[in-house]
Length: 237
Image (cartoon, rainbow, N blue to C red; front, side, top):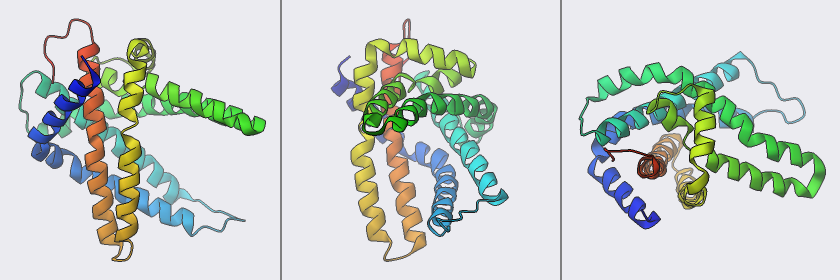
């Protein structure tokens, strides 16, 4: 299936289920974005010569990872059950998603380390850090399906990482193109956030949540690409 067809079907899915998606993800996004903004303000106000990050900051980071894992679990589970024609309630989806949080958290940590390793390694050699960045972006694309494999295929974190790397080989370029949608979304989000700064924190929070919500379209598009690329898939989004 062509990339344009995949994006069109992902757009139709997002549009047709936008109310359910909002009810499921927006409350989680408010918590996630709120923590991110608090951490950002703490970092900006820190003494650069003697930065101090204590227990509250560590707890906030841990909660942020847990909340993000819950968001991904709930979104992926929603897309999976809808691909089979079911219409579960938001409460059932959230309850079921909790069991996927631990493996998704571990998978996210392992994947993150694998993605950051090249750019951090090459950064020690000066200008060739760009080579590390390219490698990291490539690995990011190859591991883009780890979360889906944890939730849909019930694989362990390490199995999902290996499975995603193997699975994404033939569709690595399409995956990169889908992931590039984050670039315009980030630019738009940054512009809107800057404009909202003059009004105050509440509006900035709302804008950031809205941008993050529409950013979930990238996950929907990736899931569609994942479903059409899987062997022997009878039910699709």
